[in-house]
Image 1 (spheres, helix red, strand yellow):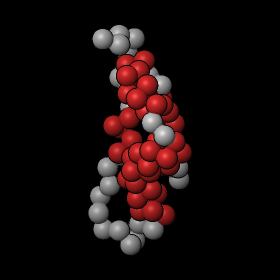
Image 2: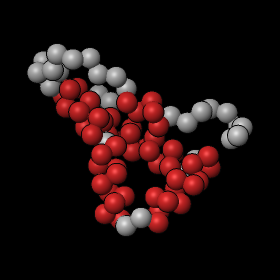
Image 3: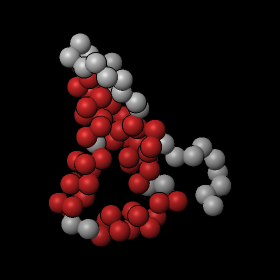
Image 4: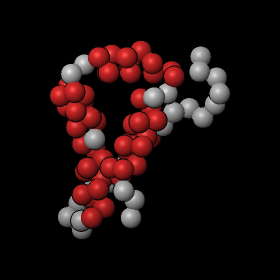
Length: 80
């Protein structure tokens, strides 16, 4: 089974550390840790839901989408 939370964490870290997101990372890193944790908690709610759906799919009658694609960086060398 896919570990949606771990997968999301890896994509979040990759996105946050991408050079194209340097301004956001600087702002993120300058905020209190509690604010960083709140943002992460908010961002990972869909991943937690996907994990819950995957573990108890009979309870859910909805189609989930792969939210993690939003963190997927472009796959090229040009950061313009």
